[in-house]
Image 1 (cartoon, rainbow, N blue to C red):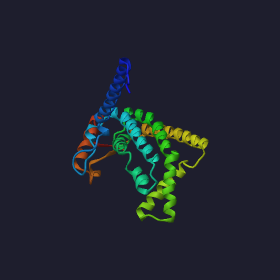
Image 2: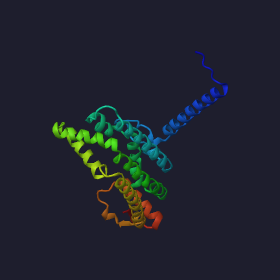
Image 3: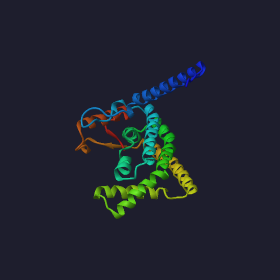
Image 4: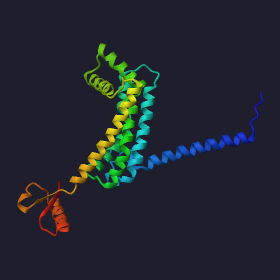
Amino acid sequence: MNITVSKSYLKFFCLSCLTLIVSCKKDMKTQSDNILLQEWQGPYGGVPAFDQMNVSDIQSAVETGMELNLAEIETIANSKEPATFENTIAAMERSGAELDRVFSYYGIMSSNMSSPEFREVQGVLAPKLSEFSSKINQNKALFNRIKAVYDASMTTPLDADQQRVVELTYNSFAMRGAELSTDKKARYAAIDKELSTLYNTFSDNVLHDEENYVTFLNADQLDGLSEGFIKSAAAIAKVQLNDVAFLFAC
């Protein structure tokens, strides 16, 4: 049988494939270029690159991490294999490695190194993180697999550590609306999203109110503090207050 393919169709097909390949390579490059997504290097199995983290990398890293994690969750939820501890609960525990790495930096920036620039990004991400959480907690196929493992463990208990993880996972999903009707799930997710925004705004307001609080100490009140820390506090006090006291942020 002879098959004839027009040159225009062949050209279109080749261009489509090329576009797809370029797009994939671009996505891979974007992920690999973002230091927050990269695997940790160095001693102790790798350590975060805190010296290279930037606020400008946070949003794209979190959004990419969420996409990758959701893809892993979909694979687990739609598995054709019978649900077991290993292919469901343990697989969930192993998923989200990229996002976990990003949150190591995110946590530092939201506390120790909080800044107006970061808080702006945090405000954008708060509702997105809530939606991300709801997509996992309300994934019916995923919860059905979790419930299957949980129900089986009620008649044939697992090892104590595995049993505890199964119970915690099942109860966490149940308490976050996994067993609700479709309408109630939507309502729950909407409330959770609104609360995430309100909580973030409240935290920003508290921080804005308190971030300039300071404590003044004299030389006889510095026992137990390192020499470097004392010198730093003295330098800050001198620059900001033209004083010889020691200034500490609260």
